[in-house]
Amino acid sequence: MPELPEVETIARGLAARVTGDVIDSVWLGSKPEPLKSRATEIAATLEGARIAGVRRVGKHIVFDLERTRVGRGARRLRGGRAKGPSPDVQGQAQWIVHLGMTGRLLVCKADTEIEKHTHAIVGLASGREVRFVDPRRFGRLSVAHGFAAQGSEPLEVELERFVKLFHGRKTPIKSALLNQKLLSGVGNIYADESLFRAGVRPRRRAASLTNEELRRLYLAVQEVLKEAIAAGGSSVSDYVDAEGEEGFFQLQHRVYGREGEPCLVCKTPVKRVVIGGRSSHYCSGCQK
Image (cartoon, rainbow, N blue to C red):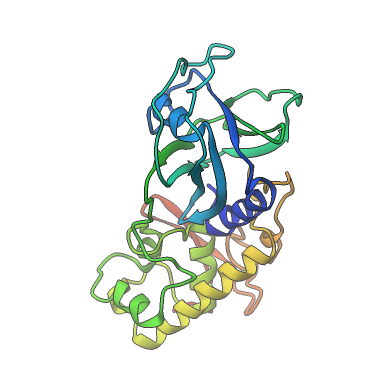
């Protein structure tokens, strides 16, 4: 699943390409799984709106919308489910996309061949289209007003707040890092890489970490996420950015996906354990 760096990379690419464009039309497919909001609500919110910006909130891509005229509702096309006129949605709104496991957002010309598993086509005044493609249908499309993540933003949270998030928690520190109600956007890859750099084993109870260990972890999370964003994210499955390009941070992984290989620091074989149903990679020599 795309994590914070991948979603940040995609959001930045989309912002550069579609900010300022106006949404002329909306087509939504017949599969119900991708739609977290009603089809008519999505159509009414998007159609006729100007894209004021695109940003990341946690693991979500958020299109900030400004209303410019009355929406006409979604088109029905190739068996789609949304049709007919829809009421106008006034004021600031957001179109929210969660990519799930295999979701992609493509910006292309209107005459580009439509890929299989395309669940949404948003036509722009510029003549281009934003398409949502998701073979496994774990991604979600929704609309909202004032959307915000539940947890703290990892790249903005201050050290004091970060330390308080984990004090007294009996869960493994790895599970706590993945708790989106605490930190919004950190996922499996970057939790493993951050814990390695901080020298903390993933099974340790969060409450057992000293203030110094939490300080190291705070710095490691910031460092790893910023490096990954600079590298365009990690392409370990289906991930590509808004330009269709793969990321390169997987080439810098120190423990994730390296089970049995020698640690790059101490040569101890990297171990893999399952914590809370998720694979965790660590070095028993470097992490305590």
